[in-house]
Amino acid sequence: MEGYKKNQYERFSENHKPKLRTVNRNQLVFRPANVDELIAQDHPARGIWEFVEGLNLQTFYDSISSVQGEAGRSAFDPQMLISVWVYAYSRGIGSAREISRLCETDPAFQWLTGFQSINPHTLSDFRVMHKEGLDDLFKQVLGLLSSVGLIKLEQVTQDGTKVQANASPKTFRGDERLREHLEAAQKQVAAMGDPNQEPKEQSKSEARKAAAARDRQERVEQALNEAEKLPIKKRGKSKKPKASTTDPDARMMKHGHGGILPSFNLQMSVDSEAKMIIDVDVTNAVNDSDQLVPAMERLEQTFDREPRQVIADGDYTNYKSVTAMADLKIDFYGSWKKIGKKSKFGWRGLSEAFYPQQFHYVSEQDVYVCPMGQTLVYRSTINHPNGTNSRLYRATVDDCTACPHHNQCCPRSLPKGRGRTISRLWVPESVVSFKEKMQTEDAKQIYRKRSEVAEFPNLWLKTKIGLKQFYLRGLAKVTDEAKWAALAYNIHHWLRLRPPPAELEAII
Image (cartoon, rainbow, N blue to C red; front, side, top):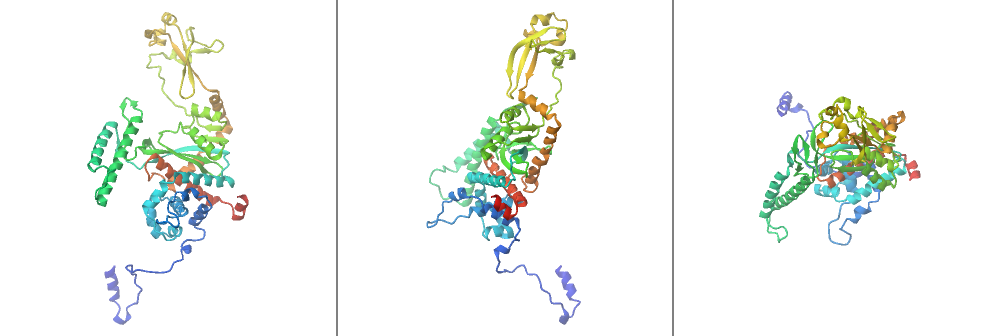
């Protein structure tokens, strides 16, 4: 480019060369700046600051040890740090190092911080060291949204989504490999000396290596404990449980795109009125079957009452959850999953003419009658963990032995000294009523609202806020990270839906 300009200049005589203002990027510029004019009056950062300013942050202030009149460096204002994190998450930024860099260059972050520089470690520590304050902050936001009618708890949807953990699938090890890694880590830590004794003179790099070695030993020990607690899966051959040495709390989970990755299960309750997130939790349970009732318990603790109506998909709809929701007197709507399984009676050697559905139940006598006219009487009851039970009915050995079709009906029972057995599943009345309700057109119409309400926050968190993978590790920390993201989501939508100032003042 410089050669091109030189050639252009050669066309002019010495007295007719153009005078140009060249760009010099190697100079230092000092100029006055009005911080308040860095961003427009309707910029989202201003709205977030005003919103946080109206909250009670006493829990955060109580944790500050530096006080006026005593030695010690002044602490950053929690209002500023909260606003920075909320604004960062609303822009899809979850890295403390990236936020620290933006505080030096981005006008919105400069406005929020007042041109102050913030160390990444300060930002990172603040995000995870104020769990009590964060929980209280989230509840205050829900209280404000309830007071202006954006949360009514009339209709709530429950949904879960898998969020990738900050760990690689290659870090998952079985208990034998974990013990080998633990032994190696213990040797490495032992070689560095006892941390409780008077420390010897160390360079910064040596100190970092020692801290990293101790941290790795702790993570491997935790991974070994997690692996020992996990059940052994059997599918054709024994599969030993594995845990990650990077994030022992993470589990291998299947995502919507079909991939199986180290992940956590993010649970959200969403109020249908304005699609606000009213509860958020993170678990390492692979499926959602046991997550509905705990979510209702958390909502009761937050609002002092349960929602009137709850909608959830088939992952939550089972005997236990339907029965529990009926006990809580919550109007529940869900999709009952039909599990299509091949009949298992063929491999037992049974003829289709003697499958259980061919046996006739006589309710007056509480007996079954087989296709050949023999009676099967009640013997015992088996209670199942899902809240149901099975009543067993059995024929006598003599009746089955004398039957000419016993080889087609009970080939495996006779060698064990018992006659043909039939089980009758007892289903709770609440489940029967639920299934009947879900067949009505009104129930189907209500259930159709589920995807519209529940999927919207999931999509927003993953696309706008960028919560496809957690930055933090450990169940407690990723729960805090999910709550920060949900807080940013709620505040963002409050700024979009809030009433005019005069109307808002009258409501509050």
